[in-house]
Length: 111
Length: 108
Image (cartoon, rainbow over all chains, first blue to last red; front, side, top):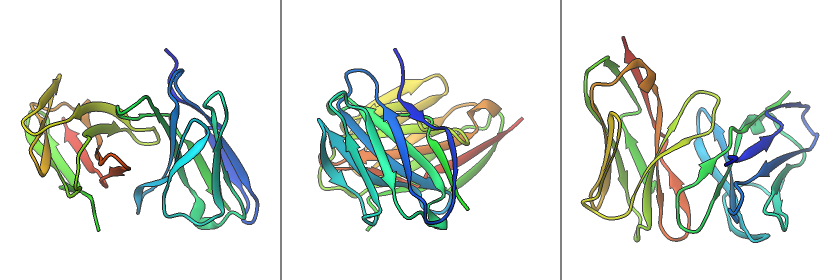
């Protein structure tokens, strides 16, 4: 059974640019969440999608957005990148009320 | 307001030296408490789910327990390969809250 797949694994962008990250959840998982992880802040919740609808949103500026497609695949977009956006971005999926299964993450570096 | 607090932040053990990690939580309703292991540069790996006070789960050298306000992850006779960051998370029927983790280092 394939796990949660995130692409790309590594990304280097320049300040002011925008970036799109992709996540393919485990087959059958309809809930997809995104987290930002930095050494100083730990895991910070970005948003959760369920059946193409945003169900929950964390405390991030509007530059961070996401969407989910009918096949449950999800994308996260960050516009006008700042140096502080450098982080490991993790996608996780789950079915019903069980715990999340995480992908390996996308390491974003903003220079 | 912190919903999930983990202690200690870091723990150094000698191989074979047993210890416990703590996760305390302050949510009004608990659907589940989860333990994850995370290795550097990788996503968290699911270990256990606990749903009610008194519940215990075991896997190899790890044992997780749950009370009404906290959970413990007991590590018995750890090996160097147990070195990782251990994360605790709670689901309060609305959101998932993660603690900041305990970084465990087991020396041979």
